Length: 248
Image 1 (cartoon, rainbow, N blue to C red):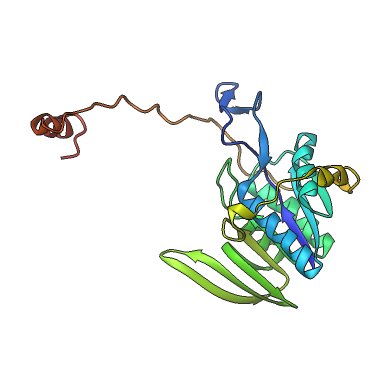
Image 2 (cartoon, rainbow, N blue to C red):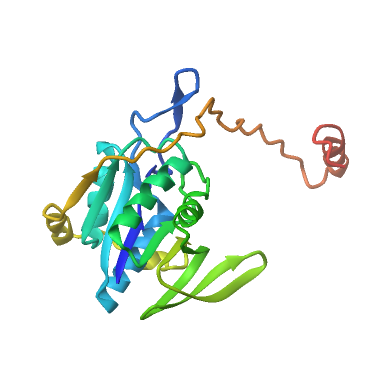
């Protein structure tokens, strides 16, 4: 089984976020980048298929040279090889077009992408890839098993979970549940050293329209000060809720 894991290169949640050029561009200065968490769950599940069923695991990213440390980390975790599409990931459709081309040329059986990335939370790329290729698609996937060409998966739906059966080739939008957090892999020294010798192929992008662009970024409004009211002063609490908060 050939597995392709799509990797997004996203800011660490502990990074301080700023914008530049009149708040029209994200300021990358001082920002630490990591593997998108939803993608990391998918990668760990792919490594399980590698260890238990002899799958070959490739990771792919659309981005510039600055994303290569993230791909190398994925190789250190256990992926067999990596692909970088040498392009700025301008919007979801552009990224989906690039990934669809890689999938089409690579003959992958299972494509695992995170259901959404931590930075833009668009949640559109996995479905777009499936639409472009006409492939089977499952989103919000929390469990998956493969037996030959047959797949059984569990996905989150409103109010519960749904168990479905399908066949390969398949594209999934994965999330936490594919593996538990405690099972996520941390690269060891042997993995880091081995990653240096694994293939990292750079591909030039295919032509694709850029349909959207960021016009302006805004930070959430700062939280207002908290007013503390004595539990014995219910009249003051009611007054504040009625006249200031205007919730009663």
